[in-house]
Amino acid sequence: METLLFDGWKSILRIVIMAALAYPFLIVLLRISGKRSITNVNIFDFIIPVTYGATLSSVITSEKVSFADGVAVLSMLTLLQYIVSKTAAKSRRFSDFIKTSPVFLYYEGNFNEVQMKKNRLRKQDLRGKVRQQGMSSFENVEAIVLEGDGSVSIIKKEDVKSKDALEGVLEK
Image 1: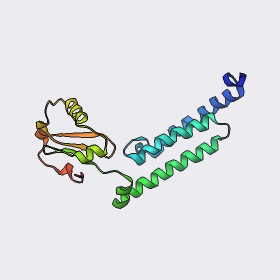
Image 2: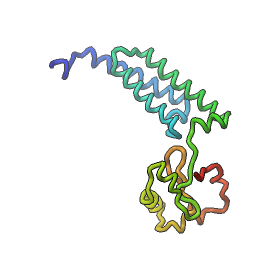
Image 3: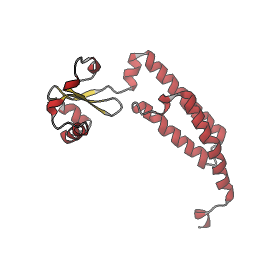
Image 4: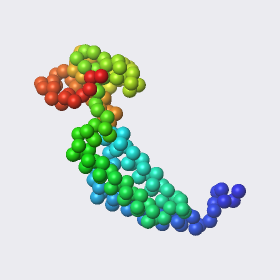
């Protein structure tokens, strides 16, 4: 029962040293790799910060994971993220495969019930988003788009001069 609450200073010292080594290394690695490594642009990009956190936690707390192992894992994750993001930038087909496309939830006065159901959204949810934009009616809304990263964009009718930003948004 004693080891449950306190197992000696050795494990605590190891955690302090590993945190002091691994955390700054991760910060430097993220600064080198750029902003894309830590944003939640889409589901694929979401994996990276979660995995970074899990790896950092393992390096700091597990005696079975050395600092060198952690450096290797974090470096490989960053390299793989870089390769995938470069490939996605060069290949539309690959990009479409790994990223979700934006979809209309509401467009020109009509709710897209299929997409709302698929994405587990209700009209009440959209009403709340419209209110957050300071509007009291859908009469002022041209479109509501569920973006690939899960955020919701609201386009006001008064702002619509051209619809070029809506190109590529899926209606079904």
